[in-house]
Amino acid sequence: MPQFQENGDELFAVWNGYSLLTEGETRGWTFWSPYYGGGVERSELVYWMQTNGRWQIIQPYFEHPPLAHVMVGAAAWLGGAEHWSHGRQKHTRLVPIALSVLIMGLMFLVGRELDQRQSLAPWLGVLLYAALPLFVINNRAIKEEMVVVPLELLSMWLFLRWRRGVRADAPRDALIVLAGLSAGLAVLAKIPSGVFVPALVLLVMTTGRWKSAVKVGLAGLVGIALLLTYGAVMDWQQFTLTTFKQATGRPAHWNIFPRFFADGMLVHNITFHAHQLFLWLAALTHFGGRGRRVDPAWVVFPTCYLIVIAVSSGNWTFGWYMLPVYPFLCLAAGQFLVSLWREPSPLAGLIFMGLLVMYFGNFFETPRAMKSSIHWPRLRTWISAFVLFAIGPYFLATVRRWRWTQTVARTATALGLVLVVGLSGWYVYHYDVLYESHWNFDRDRYFDR
Image (cartoon, rainbow, N blue to C red; front, side):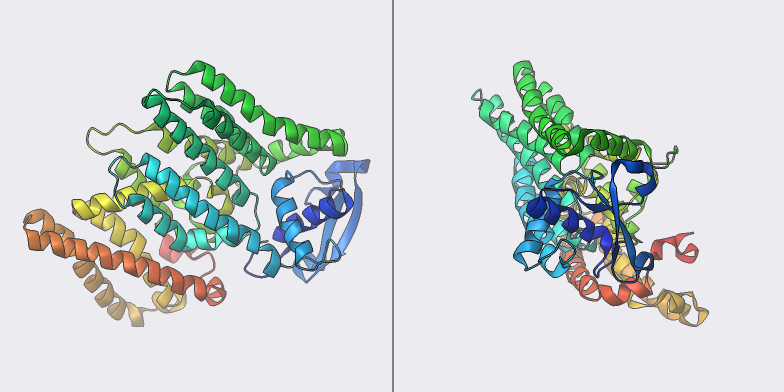
């Protein structure tokens, strides 16, 4: 399963993409080889020592759509691979890294359209996305979401530009058609992202432009039609059989949603739940402001996607599943930080300092050391001092709204943000060590109870 080194759960996308580009055939690794019966050809790839060094490969392979796979397959070919199994992550991970840069640019464009205060909020939202380990590490994984997210954000930006024209009584329907096309093409990377098409139709309907909503729906169907055409050309029977298995073959229960709010995951490593909580609380604090009506453009895309991925995945949840939701949470968190700067408050300060900043302290000690009573007095001293100097200024600014108390609270916010960026970089740089020492840190009952 995905780690920071070579692994088949990322490279299977390379194997499939390289095969499509060079042979015109699909090929990939599967858990479900017996399910496909005689409809597939089987082979074994002996690779490393994971899964006893043997990977079950099937042809044809339809467990994931082809768009993201073709991109990383091309990177492997350009990197000198002469066989579908020769791709290496030093070449193929350049694709998600490049896409993450594109994502940040699109995030800024979307954030600027959504920001009614014309503040630094879009910049701060992008800064969080660029720095926090939740995104830096998950964005390095070769996963289909890295193609879904830029198409999602492009669709949203085009919609917002179109809506601005509607409000100025100068709509440009070409923009909304392109938005629908972008939303529809996302299904070529990951099937659950097809929900962006009806979500976009819903957003257009909020403007009362019914004809435009129909155009969006028709444009979005182009991507779905392309996926169905791909399946028909390759092997329709196996395509439909595989799609049904992907949709129904995972565990189902009633507790599918809480994990997306409470559990941070670095690929498979259950860590950074405090940052996950910060993003949600910051977003909800912004949306729930006094007398504030929430623009549906903030919530429709991420909410629809979260519902679909939760229902379809059951308890097979991985860190990259949240990637299409995170850009909107980061942009909302940017709005939260601007509000915290303008009007310092103890609760907002606690959310910022107690969740986003303070959590990094866990990685300067080993879990074993923190469990030892010998270290408790020292830890309590440091923690008490941090709480006093990091959160205390927000109480001071609330009790006496003098200029100097506001300045002290704002200075605390600025220093906290500098710490977040710096410590995020430190964590990512040392992840090869922290991966081992703090594996599934948030599942340790000592720290989780």
